[in-house]
Amino acid sequence: MATRLIIRTQRTVLALLMAVGTLSAQQIPASACRQVWDGDRLVTVSTEGGRRVEVEERSDRARPGAPPRAPQVLAVPPGIHVRYAHQGTFYGHRFDRETRTAHLLRSRDGRRWEVFGRLAGGHRLLEFRHLEDGRVLLVAAVAPFQTEQGASPVALARVLETGEAQIDELVDLGLGAWERVPATRNQWRLKAPFLALETMGLWTQAFHLPGRVVLVDRWRGLFFVFDTERGRLQRTSQVFGLRPDQMEPEDEFCVLGLQPRPEGTLLVATREQGALLFARKDHPTPPVDGSPGWFRKARPAQADSLRSYPKVQWWTFHPDGAVFEAITAPEGLPSRLDSPEVLAGFRFRMGSDGNPRPEFRLVPRPGDPSPEDR
Image 1 (cartoon, rainbow, N blue to C red):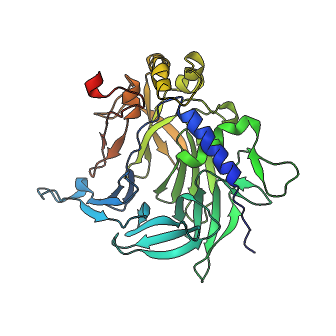
Image 2 (image 1 turned 180 degrees about the vertical axis):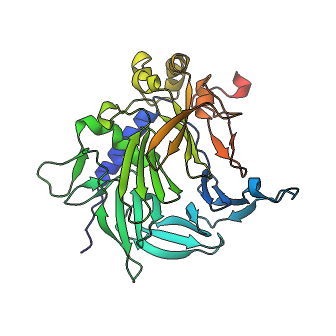
Image 3 (image 1 turned 180 degrees about the horizontal axis):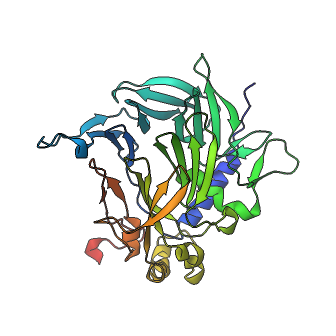
């Protein structure tokens, strides 16, 4: 029997308020494009709502002397959020506000989309991936899935012949982070040592690699590796070996950026370990008061934090063993952060030749004077 899931609006609002307050205390790296290797094709989804998709043939395997081919550009209909491509099919989702239903979609050309699953109950999805056993791995946005048995931001669903997607089971991430709210049957909350995970539903990103789905909590640097056969959690790893109960909600953002390499690994850029453990303690920002002037008052502490902990640490993540291999900065990409503006604009993408390239942009900060006022 399908498990009845309950959405708790209060928890959603609490998570959002907590996230906004914490985000106000630091700079967050720019949102990078979403990329996936589908065989010898590189599929790139823009950051603008996932509505512009580029498809490129892998250029380092092109015939010698052949002229470069321009990317194929797909204009996706409004409201559809493209998430990945697999074996020539694009996958995405949209949320119907009137019926409070999440639609799981697929398309062969990026223009005509077919609904292959409908998840009712008001669930907002951050990510999803189809599995070889016919089920779908779902990642909740903001609020976790909750049942009488527990809570988790990840669930497995089965699509029935009617097209209805029903939750089969919640995925235990092995963190032991949730406890039942007293005097309730199906309301859950994070235990006090795990409050840093409250924003997991805001900053988790999924990567479809050969034989693996990797979920990455970018804020905390947590990597969860699943198999693509049945969605079984195989390994969990944190970049620096830290446990979630060692983290604080106000800790620095860990993963600056990451993209898939064509051979099935991830190229990852993070802050250095000292930044996560000590930056906010060494250089506290003033209490958040919600005013535009707060950002100017907080800037000295943010700049001091980067001066104390400027290093960008680069890694190759191997999903088979959930192992992080430290590497030098790839050519053209930075090994340090020189200012809060550089941190806020940090992003990179993979080229069709399999090599990374920078996509930095300076991000105006709230409360900054306009250029004519400087």
